[in-house]
Length: 246
Image 1 (spheres, helix red, strand yellow):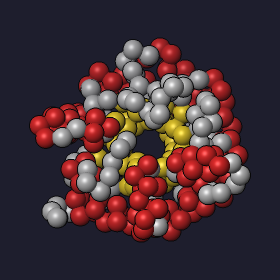
Image 2 (cartoon, rainbow, N blue to C red):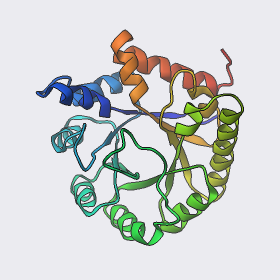
Image 3 (cartoon, rainbow, N blue to C red):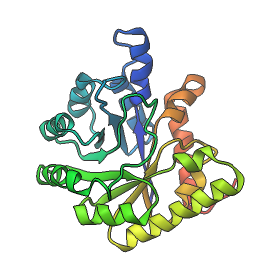
Image 4 (cartoon, rainbow, N blue to C red):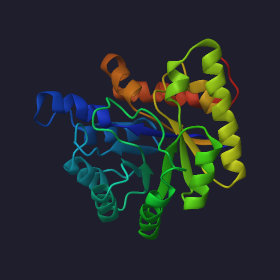
């Protein structure tokens, strides 16, 4: 089975830094450690209110880190201008509400099709690979295909937050969406809320190509260190990919 890529989201290193002010802990150092631990890419969400990642962080990530940068961004003129200037490897378009603690769900790619179209086109023409962060729903996968976005990232938050039969229902929807997305020519990624306990069933989906994981890894790093936390996640992903059950 194709090796599954791991993108490490460093947003919440910046959250801790900003709680106190100053320069520490440095999210760019976290990105460097993630690279050493086996991450395949770095994800960072530059929010409108700059609650964690800052413009300077993005500047430094582009200059100092060799791994591909996946810039999570809202569909706004300001974020488009920043993405066009920095030309990250990938830009993942996400919904954003100022009052939310974290991204609460996928973007309405079907309902916002006409608004998203010029943004997707501008990013693609500038050499950035565009992905849309969406729910596991064929309508949004069809919209991504119509928009010309080559990648979708399936929202795994509801799957991670549920238990029992509800979790199995969400997992089945993600599996079906991954198969359908691949069938229509999209590359399928997934992320949001994944932990050691929830990653294996998602990693085992044959059509999945990349997982983006952040908050859990930063929290686990408090206890075991960032490199060890990432290495364990990498191991669990690889075991699931190989069909090894714990």
